[in-house]
Amino acid sequence: MNLDRTREKQETPTELFCREMTEAFDFFNRELFGGELPPVLLTLQRRRSAYGYYSESRFADEGKAGFADEIAMNPDHFARDPEKTFSTLVHEMCHLWQAKFGKPGKWNYHNKQFANKMEEVGLVCSQTGKPGGSRTGKGMTHYIEPGGRFQTAFRRSDLAITWRDRFGPSGAHPRSKVKYTCPRCECSAWGSNSLHIACVPCGTVMQPQKLEKQL
Image (cartoon, rainbow, N blue to C red; front, side):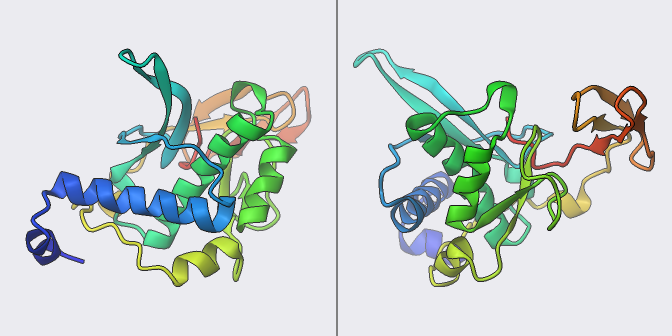
């Protein structure tokens, strides 16, 4: 997809982006959630610490006294593999599912119910973003299950993101400081990204927080 497609359909970049994201939400809702998720308001937010996030009842329609949940996507990272970008969307859709049909953990804690739902749709929770990482906790990321439901659905779709940030993650300046958190007591400390820090009271190595922190 390119600018020619935008011109052919007489769509502005905003219109094309909104359509592509709406099509993606509807596609995954149908294929992975049985169409049971309610509509949301999809937004772009450049939150430095996240690829995306979910916020319940974030918007209000004062005329109808109704509310809409928000799923935000960070355009800073749209230049990466589209499969990974859309996996972030599905991650946030799992938060939406849990808010409506389950019991979310407190204070951004990704609990077992959330981890189980993620695995059901073909994404695996991991604090390291790799196999073997803790599947529950705060600041959770994930990896895509090879041959799982998400990957299978995405690869037979024609979903795409046409407009991408020219200065994506490959051109971004690395952060000079990283937040480290104890997986037991959740005590935190900040330091350079090359440190190895331990929580003395717990005797546990503190884990660096990954970019794909869901807020």
